[in-house]
Image (cartoon, rainbow, N blue to C red; front, side, top):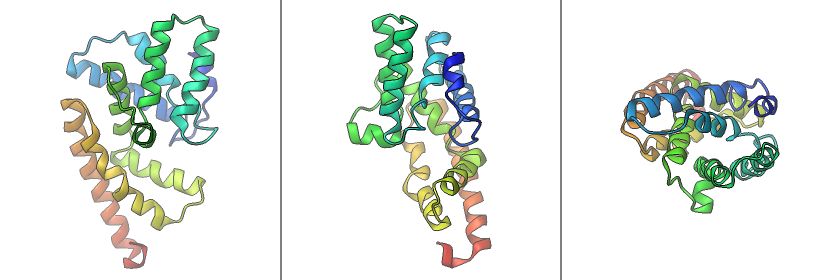
Amino acid sequence: MEIARALYNESFDHGLPHVERVLKWARRIVKYENIDLDVDVLTLTVYLHDVGRFIGNPHAYYSALIAEELLNEIKCPENLKTRILNAINAHSFSYARISRNGPQSDLEKVLSDADKLDALGIVGFLRVFIYGERERRDIVYSIRHFHEKIFRLRHLLYYRYSRKVAEKLTARTAKALNMLVKELGTKHI
């Protein structure tokens, strides 16, 4: 776990703070949905899910490659390694669409839902602009991103708890975006 932590920076959008929030969401999903998952396996999977993001896209693919090396180093049993790598490969909204490899197991679905929940609400709102600024995207691009991806996430969740929370978080995101667009004026839409 310490090795995985060391691979992340402190960036709010995709660094260690993001991973820790995803773990919080994952634990809540498991609790409220009464899912039988080994908490250590879940924790390890969450900590490894974005380790390849610093390489580029598709980040899920690169994260799985790095995770495989780390799991080999600790002599992770083959069946467990496969479960973890499948979850990492399936968690990404964009990569799952390209690879047609969406979540199947509870571990995969919990990671996918938890990661998407962190993209919503005020936290998600901030993440879009922090990431956009780092990638030198203009504000119009970031605003469009909400309509092209963020507002669609609530329809891609697997668990009732996740969908219920996502409705509230999406409403907050929409409210914040509407306030921003109103302050900026129509030239930014």
